[in-house]
Length: 120
Length: 140
Image 1 (cartoon, one colour):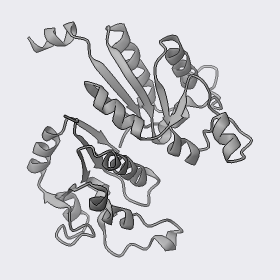
Image 2: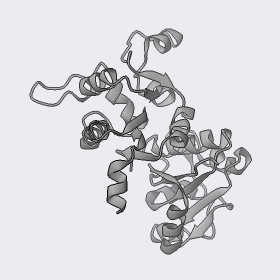
Image 3: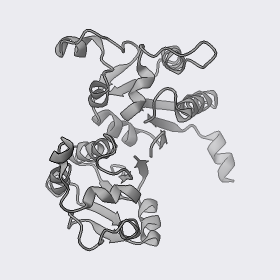
């Protein structure tokens, strides 16, 4: 059986290529049909903020790629509710509806469920 | 009991490196890799991603009184004939091109060669599947 991999994405979308490169690992895993999960933690929750304006920064919009995750076979999507709330984002109204909102305790259990973890 | 088992059994490690050559975490990654082999363990693959690609660059010049990490990595990988993979997308984005990519994109500067191989993220997933443990250095 294939080993499962959890990617923990902790960087804001416009602070550099980190968020995109974390997502690329997830998409590659999905393409190989591997059991892969993605957790948005700390500043990573900013990737799920609504009404981002990438064009104003002359950047490519990441949110379209995030919306496509379930289509690429990545359905295990999670977001830390506390990270969102402390950054003024409503955990129940983020741009990725499929992402399950988790408590700190649930995140501990989530990490425990995966064989390998990469934090970026 | 667990400790004894760990010492006696050979582990297969995959090592992922995300930080630039001048970062302390990159140095720790090399020390870990050296210790793993010294302990009789196996390294199935080194995978350099994000700023970790700079560790494979032959264009890094380190001051004489500092550790030349790219050179140490190169010697280590060559000596032990390890599988050293540099993510091609991350490397292109950062200008760490091998001869083939420099030709493909018509760039003058070749920064990386043997023993490093430029390849895709599939190599990271492949290593994760193959290894007992994935050990990451320099992530967020």
